[in-house]
Amino acid sequence: MGAVAQERFSTGTAVVTGAAAGIGEGLARRLASLGMTVVVADIDADRAAAVAADISAGGGRADGQGVDVSRADEVEALAEAVFDRHGSVELLINNAGIESAGLLWEIDEARWRRLMQINVDGVFYCLRSFVPRMIEAGSPACIANMSSVGGLNAVAVQGPYIVSKHAVLAMTECLHQDLSIVGAPIQVSAIIPHSVRSQIFLAAQREAPTDNPTANAVFDAMQRDNVTKGLDPLDAAGHMIEQIAEGEFWIHSDDEMCTAAAHRRGRQLLDLRPPSDPRDMLTRMGVPLPEGKP
Image 1 (cartoon, rainbow, N blue to C red):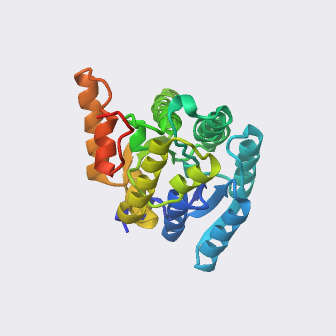
Image 2: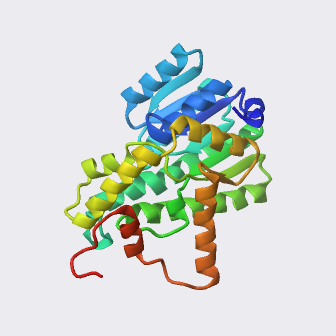
Image 3: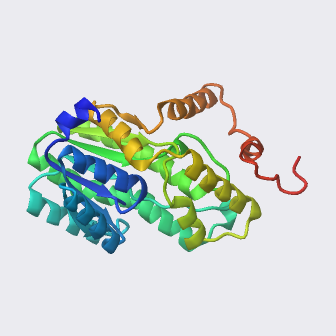
């Protein structure tokens, strides 16, 4: 466990959205093990309560809170309850998010709106409710927003998710600048994870199934790779929390893979190249090319 994180995050309150599973759960458990009081916030209130109870049973301090981050009123109620109970928030991690598969023009309108409401509006609502209270508290704090390597590059057949993660990254950079203007003692970090084991691809196929065979094959391959090659959520959380504690803006789960993604984006922009040919990605993943596409 990193020495800097052990010192910086040994006390105080952390709020993690989407913390009932996957990366969010890993972050919540790691922060609790360091000594923070963790608010495990998730749309699945029962699962959030179970994670918090398990943390508490292991000697940590945690509260489970049900919240749909796509609803501004629920986020505002969460922020009010947290500050009423704990007085301050030293670390806010906006992690809640969902995926979706398919060609852009085949995405169901309701699914598009739901994904944007959670992945983008949810981050905004949390910032709008928590930031003024964090500024008023006046103590050093940190906000970390969950983007993705997909927030740096384009990826075929998951357009809504990629669009949302580009938006989260842009929002995080704007937040960094806005907080600098007012001189608030609040660090801002953008989390850019690579593959961390979770149920996000399975959930997307279950909640928003697509008839597109290529999209389904890609998500099957991504789920396979996520299981066989993805980082353990607790291990990834430990690495990312240490970087946050060190004051970094760019937070990576896998330094080599995430830096490579940033460099690809940088080279594309410098050379004014179009996005990469997705057929290369399909071939690497073992996904058959659509008929008639060499």
